Length: 343
Image 1 (cartoon, rainbow, N blue to C red):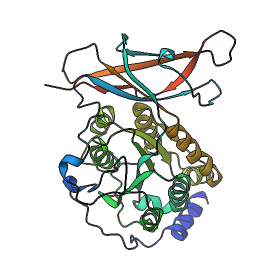
Image 2 (cartoon, rainbow, N blue to C red; image 1 turned 90 degrees about the vertical axis):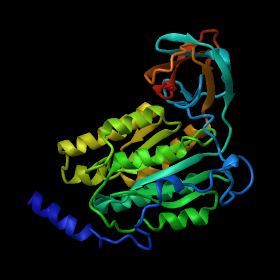
Image 3 (cartoon, rainbow, N blue to C red; image 1 turned 30 degrees about the vertical axis):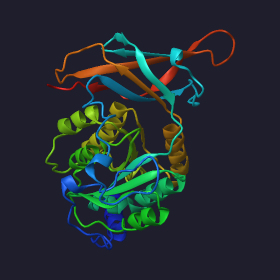
Image 4 (cartoon, rainbow, N blue to C red; image 1 turned 45 degrees about the horizontal axis):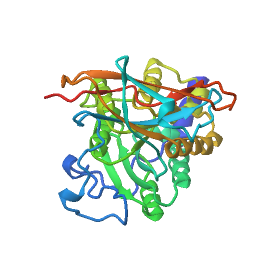
C-alpha cells in the first residue's frame, strides 16, 4: 500500500516536462555575467574589461593577503555586533597571524541563486517556489542578485540585477523541469568560477535536492573549488517533507544531504533542511541577517610558500559581552581554509 500510494502521489504531482519559456541552450562559460555588480550606480552592459573586478578578494589568487568574512554569535545563536580587532585572533595551520584589515560589514547583499530544476524537483516543486520567492521577499534596495538554474547543465536565467521585476520574471520560469539529470558538481564549479572575481562578500544560495547524477566534475573537484572560492554557500534542501511522509531515505538521499552540509561548512555558510513550508520565512530572514552582520578581516600569511596546498584557518573571538569584566569565547562562523597560490 505504501508503494502504491507513493506511485499515485508521483503521478498526480509530476508536471509536464517542459520549462516554461526558458531557453534550453546554456550560455558560454566565458560569457557569463556580462555585468558585474558595481559598487555604485546602475549596471552597465558590455562594460570594458578594465572596469570589471580583477579578483582582488578571491583568496585563491591573492598573492599574500587572505580575506575572511566572519559571523560572530553567542552560545544562544544571537548575532554579536560592535566588536573591535583586539577581540579577534586568527590562526593559519595553528600559527597566529597578524590582522591587517578589519571592518564591520554594513553593505547590501551580492548573491547568486543556484536552483535545481531537474525532474527530481517535480516532486518538490512547491518547496522550490517557497524558497526562491522567500529569498526575493528578503531583499532590500542595494542588493544584487543573479539566478542560475541547473539540470543537465547550468543556465543563466538572469544576470545580476537590482530590479525586483527582472528577478521575479526569472523566478517565474521555474515551472516544470525538462531533464532528469541533476548535475550538482558541474553547477557548483560553474557558479563559483563566475563569482570569484567580484569585490566584497558574495553568497551562493543553493536550492537543491543535493542529488548528482553524472556531472563531468567529480565531488572532489567541487570541494576543491569550494576551498578556493571567494563565496559563502547557503544550502536549502528541498523535498524533506515528502521524504519524511513517504519514508524516502536511501543512501543516495543521505549522500545528497551530506553534500549540502559539506559545501556550506567548508565555505563558512550554513545549511537548512526545512520540513514544513512555514519554516521558509525564518530561514531567509536568518540568512539575510547573517550576510548583513559579518565582519571583514584580512591578514598577510606568514607562510611564504606558494605550494598550492590547503591551509586551515581558525578564528577565535573573546569579548566581555555581559559587561562583567570577564571576556567569554564566542561562536565563529567563517570558511575553514583556503588554497595557497601556486607558482
